[in-house]
View 1 (tube, rainbow, N blue to C red):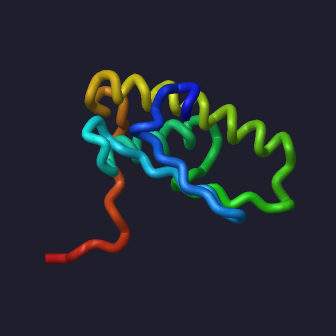
View 2 (tube, rainbow, N blue to C red):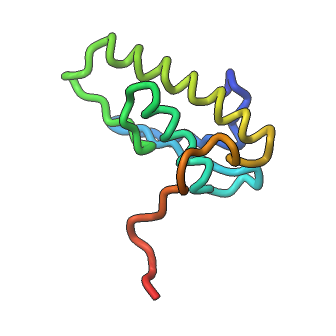
Length: 104
């Protein structure tokens, strides 16, 4: 995140057993379009990712290397969207919606 100069837009929260990424838009607030774009790019690189990394002893070094490579490559696309101020023309489909939300 620091190498890509995206500290303002991709927040990393971690403790001893889990790492969470929070994806923000150009206004610095959590943004579903930008989050969806990042998830889309990770999936395109063969990693099913929801913003949470929960490593286990079943993960090999090759697994982690693949994840890190996909994450770095996805950050490049994310930066393109941040620089443009929009996910338009990069996002395929509609942004993800929160699972738990008010129903009216």
